[in-house]
Amino acid sequence: MLTTKNRSESLRETIEEMIAVGEFRPGQHLDETDLAIKFGVSRTPVREALIQLASMGIVVTRPRRGTVVAEIGPRQLVEMFEVMAELEAMCGRLAARRMSGDEQASLLAAHQACMEARDAQDPDTYFYMNEAFHGAIYEGSHNAFLAAQAQSLQRRLRPYRRLQLRVRDRLKVSYQEHDGVVQAIIAGDSELAADLLRQHVTVQGQRFVDLIASLQQLEARPEPVDM
Image (tube, rainbow, N blue to C red; front, side):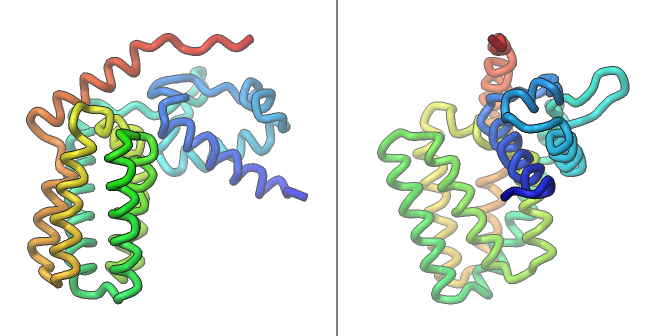
C-alpha cells in the first residue's frame, strides 16, 4: 500500500514528466483540486508533490496566483544552457579518464538506442534514450557531486531539450554529435570529449532561433478544457 510520501513522490514524477513532454506548458496554472481529481488522490500528496517540484525550480508558487509551471525567458535560457554545456563538458572529460569497460558498454547501448530512434524518426523515444546517453556520461564521471548538479539542471531544462529534438534534422545531427563524443570517451581523449559535449549542448545562433520558435508554437496551443 502506498504511503502519503510514496504517493507524493509518484505524483511528483508524473507531473514532472507531463511538464517535460509539454502536457503542462510553461506558465500554466496547476490547481491542487483539479490535479487531485485528475489523479484520484487527496490534495495532500498533490500539495507535497508541488512543493517538491518548486524546490527543484520546475514550478513556481506565487501569492494569489498559486502554482504555475516555471517559465524561463530567452536570456536566462541561454545562460542555463551555457552552464549545462560546461557541466556536461566536465562530465565528459572525467568520463573519458574514468569510465570502466562496463560503463562504456552502457554508453554504447544508449548510443545504439538513440540510433534506432533516429532511424524510426521518433523524437519522443529519442528524447528518453538521449537522457540515458547523457546519464551514462554523468555516471561515468565518477564525481557524485558533479553528476548531481548536471542532473538537477538537466531536469529544469528537460522541456526545452525535448523541444530541440523536434526541429528539422535535429535527431540526425544530435546522433552525429553523440557519435563523436562516444569515440572520444572510448579513446580516452578527455579534452576532445569535453569540447564535443560543450558544442553539443550549447544553444546559440540558428539553434537558439529554432528553439524559441518551437517554444512560441507550444505556448500558442490552446489549453485543454477539462470536461
